Length: 559
Image (cartoon, rainbow, N blue to C red; front, top):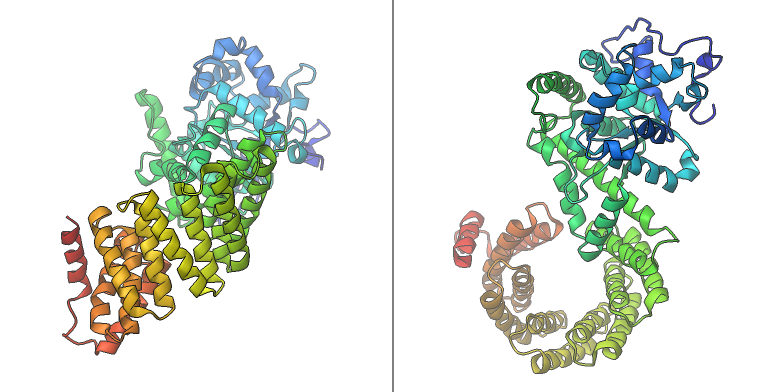
């Protein structure tokens, strides 16, 4: 069937797809027959171009300024369909006006949005999304929007089966859900229960799920992510807060009659969701992952636009590479970062700050992938470029040199790496000051390489000095202190001093649990090492204290 065409049995024009037929819902949540009520309101939508026509029929954009979708429904949709008591799509299908029936068809995507959004923003977001996805949707796709496809005069009387069976099945039939997110820093889409159901139905039905932003929100999001890629995680977590706080479906209603009607619909929706086995944290977790993947995909699509500003495109690719790196998606991270380095090099040159930062992050990804030769080569390039751009003893240059020395050690050239790290430590002390956090980082690196080389006495001396200063300058619970504790314990074990190593590993484990969580891979690695140390000591009462007591002690020391 052609995109947007009505099912064959309705294409003749002699059969009204909106004629109501009896529906028999089985306990198995399947329908023997889909009546016109479920069918028409479930898959029949309007052409995207209809939104422009609708705005003109409402008196133009200036007449809709400041109006939410709820306002537009009350002021325009309901009044225009009240005489027939039907949906907008049904009225269009039955209209004698030329061309109106051609504006109705089988929907190609569900457009899911909060009714608290300004209507003009929704319309412009649809237009932007269609323009970007014209290859898959066509020039004028048919979209399902409940504002137009559902009879607003009967919406409060939709039976529970509509939400339990009909709507999820219709979403699968349409095959795509596009959800609008605004504002980008804390989207309010999930304040609406309908949106929660549509997102979950997409997940359970394995239906493609996409996020759409208005041009303004897209620009704001891109700039935010470029400035700090970690803000993407914050944004996604903010989007599901209404579900976690149980305010979904209860936000923004001041009219008591409307609020009461919405509460009835909300109850039906969440009953449908709970019947699928999703409630509480399980629902939050599912939608968190779905949303994160969809937003990341949207940003990836933006970054791949060839007509975008090259520098901004390169920086967005760099941010996406960072996001994938944090998630442990190394192959995806390296792909994004390689594109970022090439794009930023083409845009502004290899020795610019943004390009060097992308190269440094790519080197980190290479290291985590075990591609140490490539990591070292790239780190050397970053150090050389930083030296030319900022000066031989600039902080960024010294940090790059330190990374290159780490990469050198990863290739197995530990003696060379130690000489490099000792030289860098001296330069940092001379040019950054003895109290610089970068000096502490180099002290740790020197001790780490000494430990790897088996120079345990030298390692314990260096790492003890580093730990004392870290505790004073950064605090007892800092991640850097945990790293030092871990390597200092290894040095002691190398000397056979397990009784000295055990309390250090115990303290390291406390910090890992409090900062990373009990199930983090780094936490589990430290716990395993600590257990082995206890076995060496016999695991008896000679141990310093229990884990619970040690955790409390670490908290008290940090105060």
